[in-house]
Length: 266
Length: 157
Ligand SMILES: Cc1cc2nc3c(=O)[nH]c(=O)nc-3n(C[C@H](O)[C@H](O)[C@H](O)COP(=O)(O)OP(=O)(O)OC[C@H]3O[C@@H](n4cnc5c(N)ncnc54)[C@H](O)[C@@H]3O)c2cc1C
Ligand code: FES
Ligand code: FES
Image (cartoon, rainbow over all chains, first blue to last red; front, side):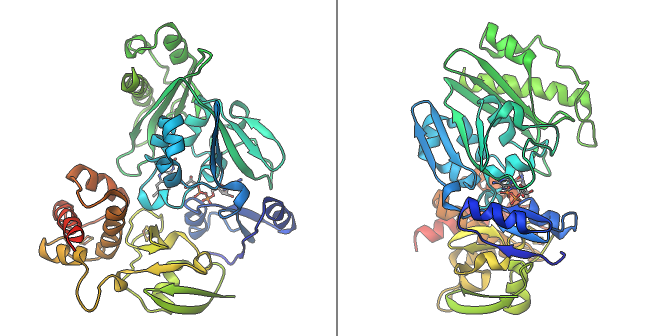
C-alpha cells in the first residue's frame, strides 16, 4: 500500500473540509472495500478521511412511515436492529446476508451505496423501497442515485449522511450467492408499498448495475403471487456474462429469485 | 507517524505506526504476536480475525490507527491461567485442524459466534457463520464438530 494520511473528523462539516483540502482524498467508512483496493494499489488516496464514527451519521429512527438509518451504521447493526426488524424485516434480513460476520461488523450502508458494486445487496433494497439518500448537500431519490456499475450521482467530496426508507406494506429479498465470493449472482428485492405501488430492485445480474424490473413489477401489480412471475421471459440482453454464469443463466436466475422472494411472504 | 495507545490481550501497549499500517501488521511485526495470520490480500480468508472491543474483525482490513483506544484480543490472549480456552481445547480434541494456518482465525470467529448466537449451535448455522473463514486442509467437517463442542463447553464453564 502507498503512503497515506489518516484523519478522523468529528463532524460531517469537518470531513467535507478535510476532503477539499486534500490533493486526492477518499472517505473511509468500514474499509471493507477501500482497504483491499488500497492494498492492491488500485487506489492510492493522499488522504483517508474516516467518517465511520461521526455521530450525525449514526443511529436508526423509525417514525410513522419511514425508517432513517445513519450512513455509518454497519451491516451487523442494521441486521440486529429491533427497530428495522419490526418496520422492514426484509431490509434487516438483507443486511444479514452481506458478506460474512467480520465484514458485517465493519462494512456500512453508506459505503455500500457509494461504491455501487453491481453485485452488492443494498442497492436493490434502496431502489425497491424508494429510499432517499441524504448527503451533506442535498437529498437524492434512489431512482437518480445509481448510475451504472460503480457509478453514482455523488459529486466529488459529497458525503452520504443518512438513508431514509419508506416502510412498505410488505417486502422480501432473495439472493443467489456466488458460492465463492458470497456476492449476489442475482438478488431480487420485491416491495409492495402502502399506496399499492409495486417496486422490484434487481442486483448482481445486469452489466449496468442495479435496476428496476418493470416486467416483474407489472406482473406483480396484476397479481401478487409467484405464479404471476412464472410465464415471464426475462431478456438476457443486458445481463452479465462471465465465468460464473452466462447472460441467459442470469436472466433465468432473476426470475427464480423474484419468485422465491414473493413466495417467502405470500 | 502517529503514536497510538491500545490494550492488547489485557496489556497496555503504545506504538508508533504509519497511517497506512494495518492492524495485523502492528500485531505481527511490532508486537510479535504472530498467531494472527495473513492468508490473502482480498479480505476473504479470515486467518487474521481478532476481537476489537469484543467483536470479530479482519485485522488485515483495518488500519492500526483505527484501533487507537481499543481493546484487542488475539489468539495468544484467549487461554486463561495456562489452561486452553474451551474452544481451543475442542479444536485439539476433535482434530479441527491439519496445518493449523486457518485455526487462529477459526477460533476467534467461533468465540464471537457463541457471543452472538449462544452455545447451542446447529451444523447449518456454524457452516453459514464460517462464510468468511477459509480452510484449505480439513474439508471443514471437524472444524464444525469442534465449534459445536467448544460452544457447549463454553456454556458449562
Ligand atoms: C469478503 C467480503 C465479502 C463481501 N460480500 C458482500 C456481499 O455479499 N454483498 C455486498 O453487498 N457487499 C459485500 N461486500 C462489501 C461490503 O459490504 C462493504 O462493506 C461495502 O461495499 C463498502 O462499505 P464500507 O463501509 O466498507 O466502505 P469503504 O470500503 O470504507 O468505502 C467504499 C467506498 O465508498 C466511499 N464511501 C464510504 N462511505 C461513504 C459515505 N458515507 N459517503 C460517501 N462516500 C462514502 C469510500 O470513499 C469508498 O470509495 C463484501 C466485502 C468483503 C471484503
Ligand atoms: S488475511 Fe485477512 S481476510 Fe485474509
Ligand atoms: S488446517 Fe490448514 S488451512 Fe485449515
